[in-house]
Length: 308
Ligand SMILES: NC(=O)c1ccc[n+]([C@@H]2O[C@H](COP(=O)([O-])OP(=O)(O)OC[C@H]3O[C@@H](n4cnc5c(N)ncnc54)[C@H](OP(=O)(O)O)[C@@H]3O)[C@@H](O)[C@H]2O)c1
Image 1 (cartoon, helix red, strand yellow):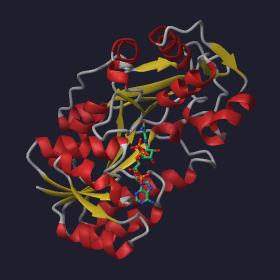
Image 2 (cartoon, helix red, strand yellow):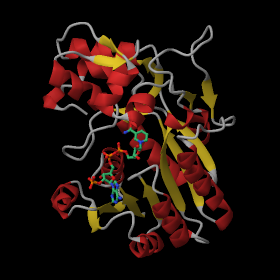
Image 3 (cartoon, helix red, strand yellow):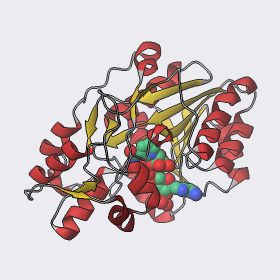
């Protein structure tokens, strides 16, 4: 299959692209910095230089490909509209990458109220988004609605992704920020008491799920992508053990926002985002191989000096 993917120099996009190349597909990957070309070529990915704002380029690439994956951004509406325009009427697969902070409760790093902690969300009963997350959810809906234009469109709503990316120097969003803060200060810190819980998944399992979805997803399907969950307190304790540092410390939200910014401190690191992804297993036969982020942090995170 000829596949066009955005975000090919990034953590998610580069890892999916490399996996698809290994599976025998021909992959063209969008990058905005020409200096990333050599790394893509090393992985067997054909570089396409451009940005998400290059509407005509995105339409042309979508028309020329057999399938399209948008992995550069969960939040760029213009790129999604252009890719849909290029694919309209084709019946081709279009996989869009979203993120499960859309159900984040911005609890300031605390576990949710209730005997079993924060609410768990399922794919068939999504909540109304908060004002902060409404634009991302609207883009997801745009993708799902593209099924009505004869596009085999699906939203893969990823949780906290861990693991090492295929592209050298790429890194995931959440855990590397905790690690970098700890490297800088010598103390691992989490938002609030760190009782907040996130569902999570290993990047290799994510890449395999995208491959399966290209082959089999029904049009207009929303997937949560997860294979386990952990509290930030447990993840930061595992980081402290791996880095041979002392006990992790609680950090008031306001202090955390100074380090990580409003969005990352409130949602990426300070919310609960607990979801269950039944459809990847039932519709696509996905069987994730890694189910413990704590195991990965303790045994693999610092392997070969990598921190993603
Ligand atoms: N990692 C996770 O755990 C996770 C989970 C759920 C959702 N997400 C979301 O998924 C998206 C990708 O995440 P990631 O972890 O792969 O991030 P990443 O490593 O920063 O990768 C993003 C890639 O997209 C490219 N890109 C960004 N904006 C672009 C633009 N305007 N034009 C062209 N290329 C552009 C970047 O290019 P440059 O190399 O030039 O910067 C980079 O290669 C993000 O929106 C993220 O919030 C991530």
